[in-house]
Amino acid sequence: MNFLNHKTFGPEKLRMLPGATLVEDKQGLMEGQVTWEAPNDRIMQLAPDLGSAHPYARFCTLEKRSFTFGGKGLATVKGNYAGMSPQRGEESPPTYELQIGTSEEPIVVHRRFATHIGGRPSAPLNGAIFIDPSTGDQTADDKLGVFDRFALWIEDEENDLAGVEAFLDANEIVWRKKYTARSRPQDLSDVGKIATPEGPEPSVNPEWNWRYNGMTYQERAHVFTVQKEWQLSGWRGWNKKIYDTA
Image (tube, rainbow, N blue to C red; front, side, top):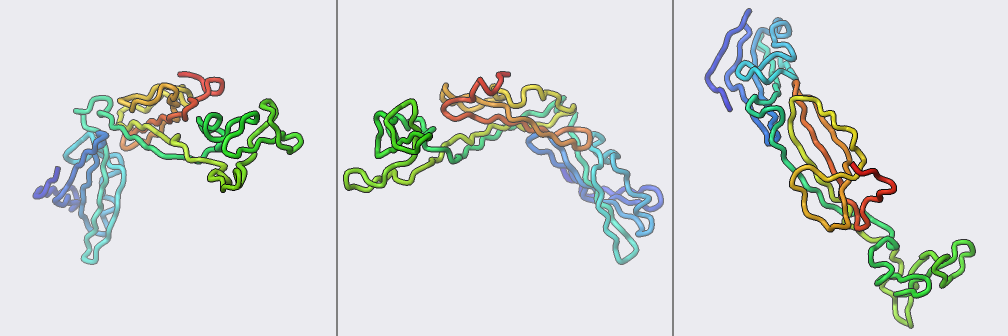
């Protein structure tokens, strides 16, 4: 929305310049700019106050002012406004975001470690060496043995797992919901708990589950831009002995 030709003269030579704007984003936040002009020595007294309404959209209020002093005796003040259109109701339609990434995990937690990668002390695979941590000696006892390393050689051939200690696991998967609201969010009780995300979250393996990481919000001229976040577990799921369920 752009107002190109309108000029308004306020008290004592405060003048609104052409080109006032309003822009609405997908989260329902509306932002705008208006530029005013007045004499250098009067601009500070005549400029609209922070919190005052946009001249064309009363639901937007002034949240930032930038002053520029000119060489011909005239200064300008650029006002930044923000608000939420009454047409949006109490909350704007939300938008959603999916972030997928990996993190490094110890090779022993790989879901196929016991069956395909390292085996177990009594039946090692691919040159896996298990030791008794109390002595440091190699052991075949499943109750005592912990994985130590892969052998460099297997029957005179180089072991392609030698030196492998970790792997990249796709467990940095985050689902976000973003929206704008008129009221300050209050739903803080489920932070850190196992919970189903809001919105059309992607389908996942039934062994996996989601945890509510929390929420951030920013107050913008009497409205709140809100972001909620859920994180997907690895293949073992979030441990219910550690995390409560919402």
